[in-house]
Length: 185
Image (cartoon, rainbow, N blue to C red):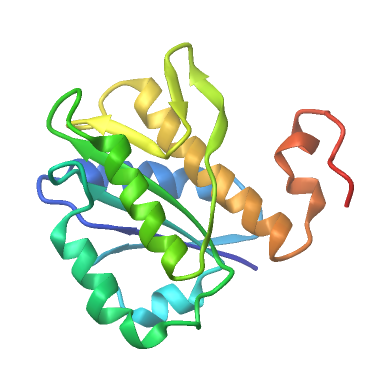
C-alpha cells in the first residue's frame, strides 16, 4: 500500500484548502492511503509512516512558517535518519503576488533534503501559465481551477513517484501514463 502524508500549517485556512486538493490528487493513484494532518495534530510517527510527504505552509517573509519549522526542529529531531530516502514535495500560499511562495517552497525542500528526503519538481504545465517547478503555490485562497488543479497534480505526482520508487509499480510512472517510452529500468 502506497502511503502519502499531506502535512500542513494554515493560519487562515488557505493552505489547508490547498492541502485538501493535494490529498485529492494523491488519492487518484490506486492503492494509495492518504493522511491529511495539520502540524497541530501530526506526530513524528505520521512522518515515519509515510512513503512520501507533501509539506504546505503559509509564506512567511519568503520562507516557511515558524510553526512548521518548529515541528521539524522539535517534533522530528529524534527521527533523524528514520526518514532518509522518503520522497517529498512542497506547496505554499501567500497574501499576494510576489509574496515569496516559490521561495517558501524552496525553503521546505531544503528542510526536507536535510532530513534525507528525495524531492522533486513537476515539469508539466497545469495550464498555460501554471507550473509546479518548486511546488504548488496560491495567492490567498485557491479559488480558481488552475490552482486547484496544480495542487491535485502535485499530490498525484507524489503518489506516482512513491508507487514507482518505493513499491516498484512502473505502470504508475508518469511517462508510462502518457504512452511515452519509460526510462531504462
